[in-house]
Image 1 (cartoon, rainbow, N blue to C red):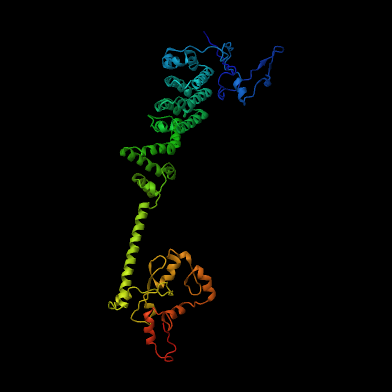
Image 2: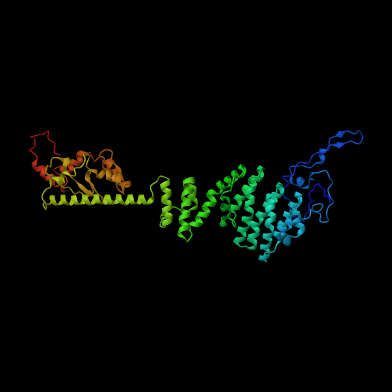
Length: 501
């Protein structure tokens, strides 16, 4: 029997699920009307045609594809006519779906009429949504029965049928499986069966089919039920065999590029926590290679780079590798350099303290004067400032102020420093440097609470005042050189031009 070749969409049925947008349907051809009176061709009345932009009009518009009249409506009020019977091959392929959904619905899904195929998918969508969550075995059987129908829908050339298939697959992954608490193996099975069809669709000649397929793959990769299985990146990075079509190969490459950081790193984070050391080593190599390519985004998926994390050997080695790639010294190197610097400073302090003790012994007469010890540490010719603790040691020539070797321990940080550089130490090096200010007149380091009074009194007079304090008649009594210098001074008036230093 010859079936009608004209297709008309089903009438709106308020009890059924709403139809998908018919973006694939062509605009109806305006038939030219032959006037019966003058036997001439007249233009049709365009006011009778509905708007092609709004969903209700497109959903109710009769698409005229062929010349034969449409078959009469069925009693169900759905699509007019009956779908062609299933072939033996189709019956064998869809045997599981026939057992669950019935032969009538599956016949529509395999029909050559696209509107039958779309309605069949909507009917499956409705049945799966309404299935009670009490019977898990029945839910699993219905899921397996729906997979062949979804695979055919994804491969369908009609956009409306393709979108209906995506809608059904999305509902299964986001609602159906969580609702019935199906196992992870069911999610894996669903994706492994349908993902190859989606990848093939991503190379379709129609741009919107390609874009929808790629976007749906990206969406699947982030779905809570699919993401932990890592099926999407696993399938997407499989190398293809032979010479793949350029459009399909480009789409596959674009999908992998979109999945690189997010999905691969999610996989790597899980694999890095595996109990097997061999698995962790391979995963570390993947992370290192990926960091060379994309850099900082890789760290967004890893624990924070802090001391607590670096106590774990695996994370420490990874972060040190990242620092090396970035051209920065690793924290281990910085820590090692800091330890070496501290050891060097301590060695210098020990040497200075040893020399200080030798000079103390020479000043007290406990040891002979060693000229080499005195000459080894001459202070620079910079203004000498009054230290908090005045420990002065003498040299052979008391008249040479540059040869005086004075050292002291800082009252704040306890560091042994030369008195000649004590001011610089207080202003630039000391831990308490924020408590001192430099007097512009005498260049000494004055504590901030005393600074204003010091400046107002004008009691300082620079280097001469400090020399008078050290070497003057009424100067510092803790300086043994002062008395020696005073005893060697000639009588007053013998040499007025000589300055006692």
